[in-house]
Image 1: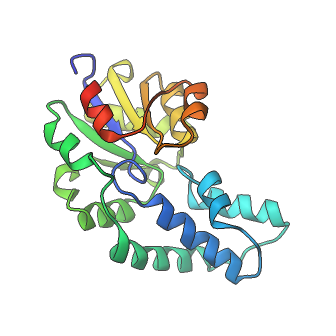
Image 2 (image 1 turned 120 degrees about the vertical axis):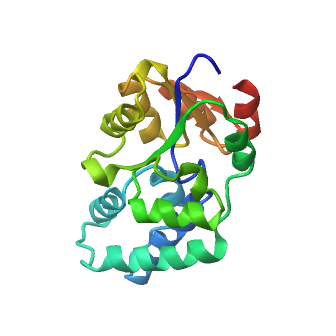
Length: 211
């Protein structure tokens, strides 16, 4: 633990198990428009990315222009699905409770989404005042700017920060920021994450034990 002055958590997929829900809703909306984007492809391609990335990916794949209101529809339907279905990632409440050094969240998601999702799973009070969104500074992972911004706001040197992520874009951003990176592999993508330069874990409990 003494090796770090700050732990920076991603939100979706690390603190809250929102990635499967969000990617499913986006794929459903694309299929509703008549384009065969599967849930499996969305789960593979979109973790750790922004809504703009998902839209651009889909438009390139099918050679189309998606409706202007797709983002609003997706946000509303995912908000409703999160409220019904969202849970904390197993082991996260215990890990957060055990931490004795500063921590924060840095996410590609909008601030209101982070706040809503953390409230649903009972973690908001732990992170209030320590939430940083890429939308605040208009720099999205895999760019390192969000992690550097979070570290600066928390008063930590990048070399003394540990990032906990679950996506290639997050891994790339952490390494570019000069930070250590641990990746939660969810029992998949483990080799891909290792090849990208992360130390991998198949469970949050394993991370807690390593700390």
